[in-house]
Length: 393
Image 1 (tube, rainbow, N blue to C red):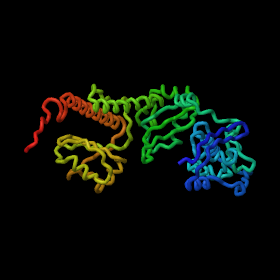
Image 2 (cartoon, rainbow, N blue to C red):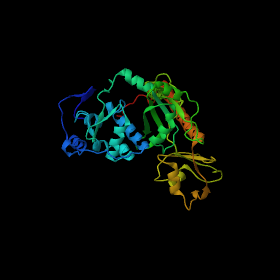
Image 3 (tube, rainbow, N blue to C red):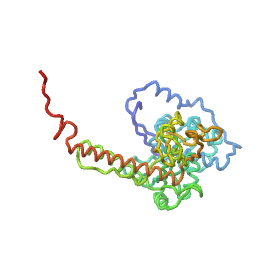
Image 4 (cartoon, rainbow, N blue to C red):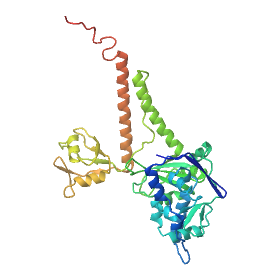
């Protein structure tokens, strides 16, 4: 629960805070104590004879500029609280609570040296070199609708990336298009990377240049990445949501049929589909497959008796599930050995497109049936209902 609401305005040389009357909780007190470092507890830091590798210094400054930057600071509740405690100054000890910064460098003298020598127009180090703040000559821009629109136009959506992607690898790949404000790895409810990112560029022209790119691969062997503007991505996604709502609404009201269409771009997580081929002549069933993979997160099996192949969709990694059921490095299904593979590339994308199409057809068929039942009057209505009841005396 946020115990106060406030706006932080950083002006030239002055930090002003407008706050409502606080209603503190135990959790708030613990959080404040964890982040606040008393002035008398901080010792000055000496940077004499401190040497920082150039690539490390560049990463430190870049990460700190992100924390204090226009994109992050206005919406980072922790940072907004910290900048109100000491006229904008935040101890380096506190900044090292950020795991990404600590993973780059946890040595405070080196961090101070990196800031000191960077020539950054956004960051300022104090005289004791143990605190950092945003340059008061660089006030935060007002959070207006125009600013949000401008930021959206600078943002690009990319899908088809490997699931072990890191921010550093992403920045290395996309930096060819221009300077980036941030890269966001999109994750699911379990904090697992979904294979897609949002990239906001400093200049809209760079974002437009990337969207116009017809072919871009993560590696020479991989498939082309799907690239579109942020606005186009959400437009497509919102259309799909609206269509589903319309289908349900019209079916409930008995109105005209609304066709459930297949989205142009299908969103999916890579590495979740297992394909089992050469099933001709093998007496097996969906139940056999579910039993074999019981406890390994099977969410759907596509197979009918007599089919030459089967597709098994998992909640997690298909490869991990496959390795867990192998016996002496062999995969045995219904007493027969076979060689399943985890779908990737074009074949994986085609699977998800087909699945989306079949889902759309299912809803369309269901809606047509509801409409037909509604026209007939449904159960107990209209012609042929249950008829009048008579009490038996």
